[in-house]
Image 1 (cartoon, rainbow, N blue to C red):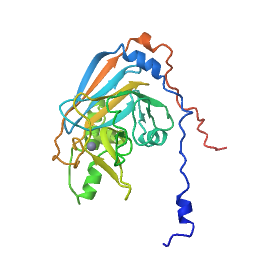
Image 2: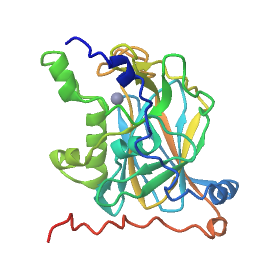
Image 3: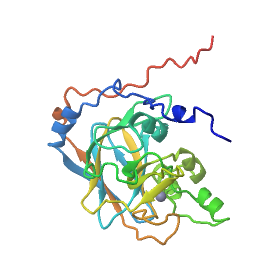
Image 4: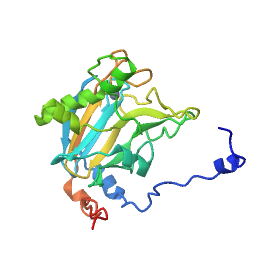
Length: 282
Ligand SMILES: [Zn+2]
């Protein structure tokens, strides 16, 4: 279509932020910072390359996802350990905090709960910022690599170690749920360590080699009792491709840490969302 006469004027309108987030309940970062100084490791689990692990974090504990042997991206799912229907909501987390998350930002749960499940308390990659391509780290824009999209794009290819399948198997093993039922609880992820953005010319989702190196970690505070699942993506550092066995792939380590409980004095657990759920019905 030909552009209208006032096309430039319409394009020149300045954007406004959809969800100004300065009225969100603030994360008590001073308390978390003091509690971090008292941490002691209590457990650790390994997500093997091209596979996933589950882990449990009691409310009030911390957990860290560590890069160990080489650059590796992880796909993270979180559930309320006592109610799997309360799961991480990457889309609303993106709407509230932006396309990538770092220290001080929170992972929110799905409706009708919509409360913080975890707060990011340390990020050794926070120096990365946004690069010249518009890329950044730890995204909530990708969904998770999955065998359905792979079959669609590869005209029927069957690949069984996409993050979606890894998370499904891990959750089924952890909970005893049949595989199809466990699959229904797997959801869009936080792409830990993944470096992604959107191309300016076509608006397509892109990935590039993760800047993560062994020794880096992303740390969270568990706001509620959590069941987590982490997949070491078959894409490895996601520099080239995923959904295949081509990329160099490394394990990821999840470490659970307990603070001195006294260090959390003054911290309130997050309340469920206060919307009355009438939806205007009379
Ligand atoms: Zn993946």
